Image (cartoon, rainbow, N blue to C red; front, side):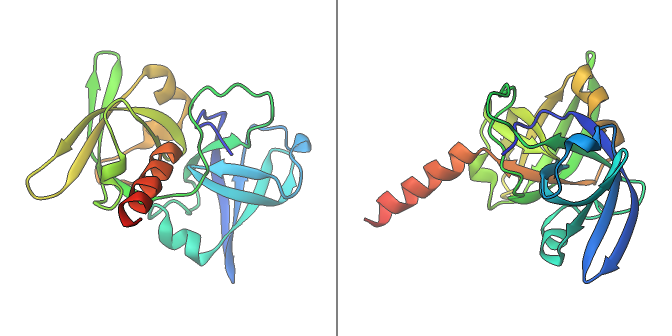
Length: 203
């Protein structure tokens, strides 16, 4: 379990494929405090530490995970938003995040807005109903508040975000480009409410 508050930006230093894809990530974390088998959110994907050394750790990324996460994410040199798993007593500064990707969004607009950045993301139709203005969403592992929703006539949905300077600086959002794919996780509360609605509708 995570909060969507990024605590480091890691960089992929090597990628090797032997069955699963093994990814080595450089980090500022003190890896002596990270247990083998610990979970770390890597741009919104919960992965298990299977090896480590001073200021690096390695994870295995399955073919299923690669197929369901943002294209181009698992490449050498890519910067990743990192968050260690939540501990009992930690401050819940964002919202409850599971590290399970619900869909892939597309960056369709990046524009300065005051001292912040306006970022618009096109979302897949199957998760669009779970995205609401002033609600929470996770984009590449970052807990964010949805500012606007635009449901166009062609069935597409675009939501708008305001990225404050602090968030822009302490995450990999500074690397965002138009057309880039990003990992999306809907609010877990929205997921359960949808399940309750569907269950009640069939009972």
